[in-house]
Length: 401
Ligand SMILES: CC(C)(COP(=O)(O)OP(=O)(O)OC[C@H]1O[C@@H](n2cnc3c(N)ncnc32)[C@H](O)[C@@H]1OP(=O)(O)O)[C@@H](O)C(=O)NCCC(=O)NCCS
Image (cartoon, rainbow, N blue to C red; front, top):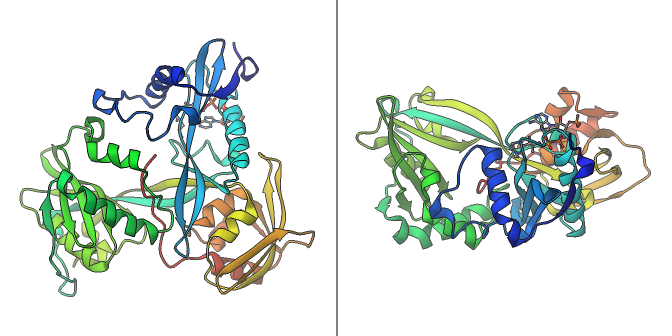
């Protein structure tokens, strides 16, 4: 049996493209459609791939793209967005993923990026490499017969039904406004927009092409299908930059004739249920991780975002996978952080994972202390740390990758 030692990791080349496609299709159990050919490789260029090779055969793969991501305080950070991680089913559990991640981290470090992010296929794999859940989303379905709006819910109107082609420039403009004000959301590169507007067959999963509802400050893109004797509208992307746009779009979505159920993924703190007379009409079908994050450079990452309260403390950060970490002094005044290595004694101690979990504001530090994931030498320091990192709004993923 081959081991990771018989495998070497190198940068991908255009000649590797077909083998990488085959590996990803086997890994994720799907086939790319012919209508995606012209977009393949544009979002994540093969030159950014790392491949694990045994002899002349590619048996493992990862790729990344430098993304611009909004962080609390409406600032941005540059992050390594990892995608397409797959190891051949013939070569699993021999340490190939581990070797790929070592190489990936070395490149991210060389690129000077303070953060690595990705969407994960399973929850059990990445904690050991220093990652933690950084954004949570909630899948809901709404039985439209139960969806009655409260008398206090705004009814601003202003929604029009458009074609995707006509609405494309407005959708891009609204997304950009939304992305700049939403922690966790990434800028969407041109190549990704091209794929998005191509509305390829694989994304439809047997449903229709996209219908478009447009408002001056928001949009809802949805598909229609019929399953188990129900007519369904599945929201593909919903972005609203004002409460009025949010209410106006939901009023149209939940008021459509010949629709029994509306399905959507919403932010953890979306007020949708409270626009309705019966909050139980919004039923949660899944709540889980939308994004995982890992801090690669503690001072660079922590000084990139804003904070809600002043803080003066020392934290001990353990980072065994990269043999990094150490004690860091963190001083925050008026939302702005200074952070540097220190020999002072730490008030709080935790694995590097915790910084990824807290970075965009999806979790509270007190919750991780309750889970015995933060060692607390000084309870006052925990309260102050928690207060500083907490954000007003839940973060949201901009686009899946
Ligand atoms: C997930 C996948 C990439 C793992 O690759 P691999 O080469 O088998 O992983 P490694 O042998 O390097 O494993 C490293 C560690 O992770 C653990 N691990 C790997 N995959 C795991 C899984 N699916 N569940 C739980 N633990 C897992 C290993 O047991 C090992 O643990 P250790 O630290 O105790 O030694 C591979 O199984 C795969 O391609 N799966 C299908 C596609 C997929 O899910 N890709 C990930 C997309 S985010």
